[in-house]
Image (cartoon, rainbow, N blue to C red; front, top):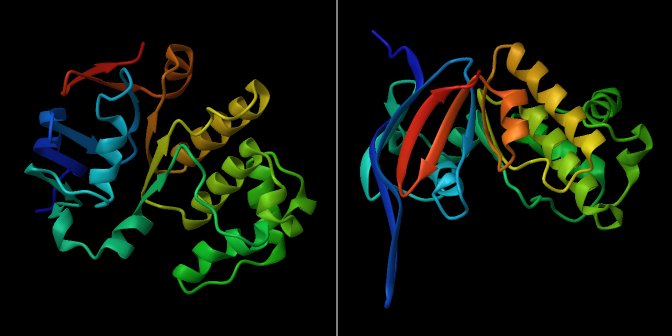
Length: 224
């Protein structure tokens, strides 16, 4: 019988060492994510929030413990396949030179598909960018516009689990709330979302489950 959880973190620890210092952002962390959860992750800077996302996408490996996706250890998944299913939206946009259309169509090509112009226009609408931005070059965009293109590209993949690392930190309030609304709709369509934020107000608006990281430990509570 398969697991009832889409993700299982089993006694995860991760440390970083330099000649004069050792930090352990994650200490024996155990937690489960059910399919369709919307989890908000908070905690002071340097407490392992981004480290957790890097472990979930195999950009790094835990020192101890294991993570299961669909009941299968992460190390048994081919990393490119895993990163399409568990997709990480970094706080700093990761885009390549070229046009907005080039970046949006890249994810579709990974899955052997082709995005039509109408589909790209719809993705831009979902992140509150004008349709004529399709032909804009990435270097012409502001930081907030780049992040919205980054989010649109991630939505085009339709990952099982969307990992968002402070995705609205470079956006104005109106754009941020538009993205929140779009991600809520994505979640309500049956997807799982994990969202890192430093904003208590945003945490209350978004998720139903809160993971609080501090001193390497994880506490879980329900958002009222």
